Length: 443
Image 1 (tube, rainbow, N blue to C red):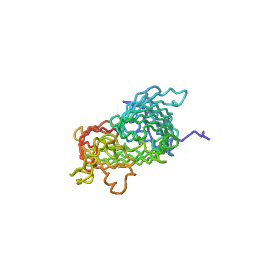
Image 2: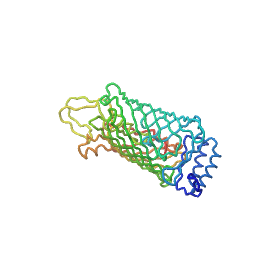
Image 3: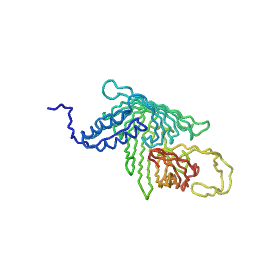
Image 4: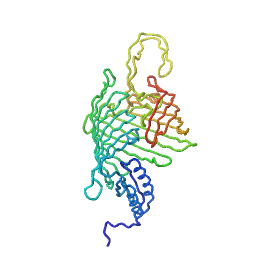
């Protein structure tokens, strides 16, 4: 009787998932090329032969092999040998994986004691998130084995956001994260403390300036970026209120797909976000949704300034009675008598509890550049302020535009665009000319 650990070489393999973690430069390129051969293996014997050949060609990398998430699947991870490694990355993060961000990470992996992979990797990372105008630093500890059905990690971080649009926000957080080996399902237990630092006299002073939150959230991400028609579906459901002063339910979802068209490419993107403060509490600014700006993914709305539309507070004063015409939301209105409330300064956009947007982009190559045309339709409201369907329809915004961009390595672009808002509300901050940056496979 053969030992229980024996597995026949002709055992079929249905799926080989390959992860390249922490490698860069020529070593990363060689690992990506090896991944193509490993995915074509149909039996364990063939896979073992390919792994032996690959390990000889990658002297600076370690190879971890374990069972995959499904029956008949195998998980293979290429990672650096023990020591410290510096990794630079430009891509998407958030929901997870939807906001354009640039990061620098230092991975420290201790040497293994005896046989087997090192038990733990510690990473120190600094990230710059374009959409949130945020700078964050984090320290993450996670095991290196990918043979477990769920990969735990512990993350501690500090950061600040609102560096350009204000008000400035500072935060500190801790997360206990459980992720499946494919990275599709993530359960996160989080605790955070946030401080809002508005300027004197700002409308943001009416909102909670300090908040603490404990929450549990589930994240789903399905990404097929390697296919000819990349598609991404991401969703996040969060419940908060066990400890701390923030009690809410929050849901976000985003769908994106690309494909070829007449020598160019098309992209469709849709997004939905809903938040609800529970127990009669007030929704903090950090939990509200915003719309507008040229960078990022979820809140991008070309033709409008970042955080440049939606529910707002304006400084007003009462003027003398007059007769004349003023331009309001419904067009030109006659003012015959009585006082008129006049705005004395720019507004403060306070965000909303409901956000939805749809964006379509067409791009065509022009030498090393790209010509782009786009259209966007979006909505950002507080549901408590809606009295009828007319109120809902009056809050829709739409814009059309075109631009030229330079593709960045790994997807995304650096672009200059001109937009024409075809549906706006008085008080919106319009930006016809914009420079946009995106990372990953977002146009």
